[in-house]
Length: 186
Image (cartoon, rainbow, N blue to C red; front, side, top):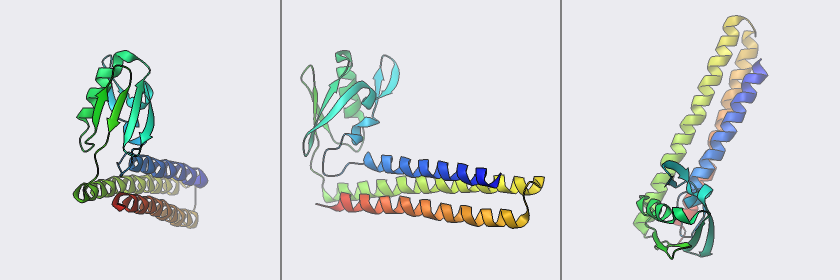
């Protein structure tokens, strides 16, 4: 029972770290990156659909991308969705078949804003890891209350859960550190 609780918490914490890394990928650096556009929600026949499901996204140059929709009828909606994204500053150009997006140079102030955004996202994911720990501790307390495990076993499991939490929070912090360095690089 205890191993099940720990395994479940580990799995969820791993997913939280992966989600943090994915979120960091959506924050713009000085280069064009398809991950920045993958999660943009486009109104596609009345349904919010991620851009990555509607089009292929390719890097043309350091600061430009080509977005080729699978359905040409979605061109205008994709272009509008890209324009409506705050903090992106992208200028999409629609030629009837492909949307070319040019990203402006990042100023120092803009880089600092992106670092703040990355730190906020990192904190959100740290909180989610801590919430997983709290749920695991609650599950362990329930096992103790039901008599399914002894106090010593529960105490060891709680220490192991705390250790797991620290490791996963450190992973998020390391990913943040790399993203900060990437953002501040000129």
